[in-house]
Image (tube, rainbow, N blue to C red; front, top):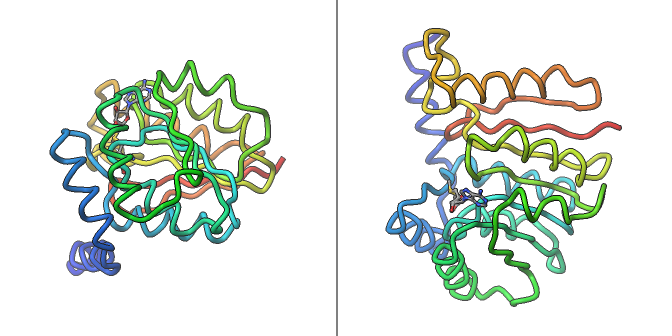
Length: 211
Ligand SMILES: C[S@@+](CC[C@H](N)C(=O)[O-])C[C@H]1O[C@@H](n2cnc3c(N)ncnc32)[C@H](O)[C@@H]1O
């Protein structure tokens, strides 16, 4: 690898300037101790939402709304984001972020609860895109639900799939790293998916459902 590679990654991460509403949401998220997606991931999520013209998106892990704002920016003006979080305080902060960004209330459906209680109630094949950014230990179960509710041709995006650079390190065998490494390979090898792992932020795995 070229010695310039880390500089290129930093350049990529800073390539897009975060809009002020996203910066403000990031500050709210950091104050609450929930880690927002990095700008490279935000830009990729916006791009994916725009490329599939995502009218219906489900997000697991709202935080204070950073990833949600990027997604909504890429979705059509009448698109609706369903966003799930277990913490009412995070949802209060996200509501502030959405209102400060000038979003109409009907653009978001905010569901406070355990993702694994909420997801089974969502309809099969009804969503254009699903974004996973909740509790890492529950990722395999989120992903199974995501693959059920996303339509054929829709996108599933999973954040933190490089997990602080530990997934790429064969010596790192702690529970979360192993779980995420195994999940990435399971999605890569699924013949019903077109999958890639983007080295933005903490690693964004993207899969398109083929059948
Ligand atoms: C990494 S933060 C999400 C950051 C957000 N995507 C952003 O970019 O601002 C993870 C979020 O998942 C939520 N969470 C954790 N466990 C959950 C669960 N079992 N069900 C739903 N949400 C959960 C946390 O409360 C937290 O807000």
